[in-house]
Image (tube, rainbow, N blue to C red; front, side, top):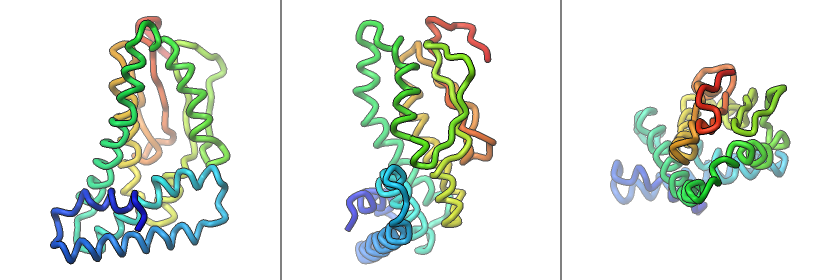
Length: 207
């Protein structure tokens, strides 16, 4: 049993009897392993996302829906899992921003980290600004493998659950770091416009 699939499915445990939930977990795990096998030739960089995030989420979501849960409710199970994990992971990051003036360095660091962790090798395509402002993290993602995989497995309605995890990560880093994304591909926009602004240095920032 894949650990992530098991933990993710646990968010819906209260909706099933003990025996029903056992079957849900088993089926979700089998669905996850099938997707991994079907995509075994994907780039290594992409597998970091499919193995840990995308395929467990799709497997659990589609299994919950097949067992009678409404799509909106099943999506929320996935959303709450990622929001909870991201808040836990980013709590130390937020603490660090409050030490001295560390938050001033976050925008520039975010761009570098995104290009590393959400790399073109994994299927992310970027549109970068011509001019770089060290007080502003600014870039657009114009192609996203999370959306591509949701589309491939015919569950694009699940994609916003992934998008919302970014709000949990970046929305409460520091009072002077403004999270200003306005849209995502997964929610119907033409791109994901990532913006984090150090408002202590750019209080009136405009593009």
